[in-house]
Image (tube, rainbow, N blue to C red; front, side):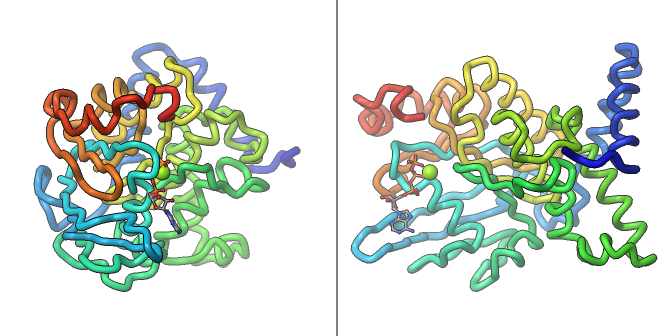
Length: 305
Ligand SMILES: Nc1ncnc2c1ncn2[C@@H]1O[C@H](COP(=O)(O)OP(=O)(O)OP(=O)(O)O)[C@@H](O)[C@H]1O
Ligand SMILES: [Mg+2]
């Protein structure tokens, strides 16, 4: 499949090396990986302060109001859950925050600055990254390449430049490959770094999407049902990864249907129904909220996934 080259040989060596490590060496190595993955961004807001704000956002598709005067804030350093029945407007929220759609009215502010008419690419550079409900990867590229391309969305020089091996790109290229490897290891799929994305198992593809989003060193990472199609054990592992992502210094917005999971991993939760925010609060408050219970009544967990 993939031609053995300098990159893949180096990679095989690394995987074997990690396998040989003692527990103590491994812990140290994992700390180094986490350090390499940690965001290196200048941020205007302190931990706990509002990083992103939706301010009275309405989005209409013809006669359908997908988002109806929705306002909520995401605080730096938190894991915020965004939940609601099918068609509630969760993915649309992501689309509005990442410049896929512009609000019909209202504003989205990142660090107090309105995103306005910023392009998707610009919003990535400003620091919002996302994964997709339906996986979107470059199928014919290796896992490693998919992540390097993610990093390129932020880098000063292009992948093209790096591929042409212009001397001034060389250093940056090497850095982005090293960071990409660290990211693959961080999400737990480094053993398949040299495989084409299309040949990876489904669970690996979901994790690769997360690695690629993290490659842009986002201020805010938005995950759209990252555990969809996972069994309970895989879901638990994914939640563990999300917790590690947050401990590494990222802020996370999580769309997830599985209530048990959402309650277990989030700090706060926002609930949408028919495009309206119907509740916002701590997981324990949301669990007891009559409007939320009513919204979910008759929707078994399995159907909602
Ligand atoms: N591009 C579009 N054109 C027209 N209607 C749309 C478009 N995108 C979304 N909608 C509609 O907006 C509403 C909200 O959709 P959205 O995908 O945000 O829901 P969701 O909460 O993510 O649901 P799910 O849990 O099923 O993923 C739905 O009624 C959907 O049909
Ligand atoms: Mg959705």
